[in-house]
Image 1 (cartoon, rainbow, N blue to C red):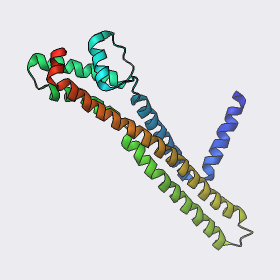
Image 2 (image 1 turned 90 degrees about the vertical axis):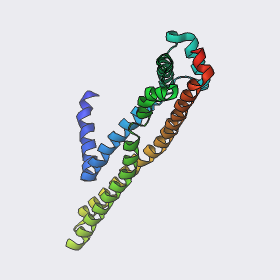
Image 3 (image 1 turned 120 degrees about the vertical axis):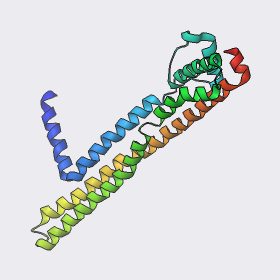
Image 4 (image 1 turned 180 degrees about the vertical axis):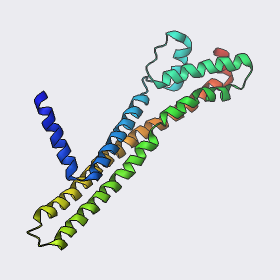
Length: 208
């Protein structure tokens, strides 16, 4: 198996070179895309079940013994600490909670712009490779007879098809998974708002 690794690498390099420099750009974009998607997937794992108020009640009853299973648990724990601190210092509770949750609002949107940018760029760069491949094909047709330039023609068409294919391969999964993760991000944002609203109510402050 180890002996076959150089062969696989050589096949991969030959495949990428068949599409020209654009293929390497698309490959780099693909790596960036999946890094961003992977990061967002790991961050946006809720970890707990049930509505926000029930989770808050669990944290209030168990305190430090509450198991931290996901981002929502950490957000609730920090919001509870901020509520206690604001109450003891006589500060406005809701503003203090939002200050504590600001880093969570930031982290749930991290790499969202990267994913959307790659999804938009990949088909366009693939189209650029297609145009370059067709130009190469027409150059082969104008520089000599069709049969004499058969290799150049096939190479140009191959480049065009490879780049178009890879551009779509990068963009389509990124678009679908990106939309799913965007919905999770929106859900977290709404839950953070609910945490702040719930803890800022007068009856909840007396219970904490």
